[in-house]
Image (cartoon, rainbow, N blue to C red; front, side):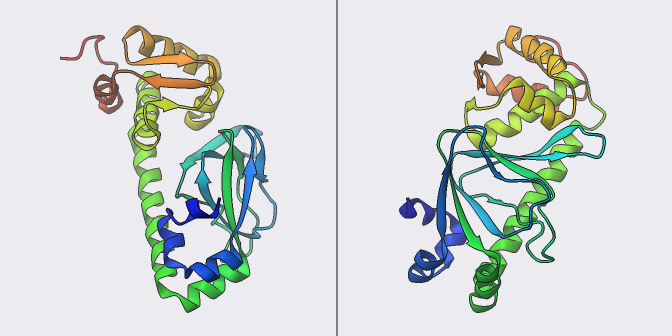
Length: 224
């Protein structure tokens, strides 16, 4: 599996011999937890293959999905510098999901010895922060139907036409109930934008979905 890691821009920067000595690759099945919220941050994780949901249990007991990450994304970096615990858990969404791991000590050494590693991590963090801010602002104060369309459009742009998420997963991303998401998906299905399968959602009319995702109020069924 090591050859797939070379497709990840950050890992391309690390000298191959050093990478072979420091990178550990692990496989996970659907639903398996890669790390748990509160565990010590032991190192830096990379998605090599598959998709990963990062989920946080809030103080009121509710579960919130803070991100869905795909091949090439880094995961679990929040506590790397101050050695705090993972602020959320990571769960595999696909079978298989392959993850790369480099220990915290090795990441610190690489950060000092290979300056391009630090620059690439900074770039990835900036890209992620922008993505999260744009995702939040695009949903804030809008009807649930438009929020679901916005989330699906964002995931379509990252994952392609078939999105391997359940109604429950989408509810956790938006911060609402599964039943509410299911009703919105039924309406999007009637409008010919999506098709719901067991454990996945297929985008069949991305142009119309994008139109609904950008609207601040419920659009008419027909695109103007």
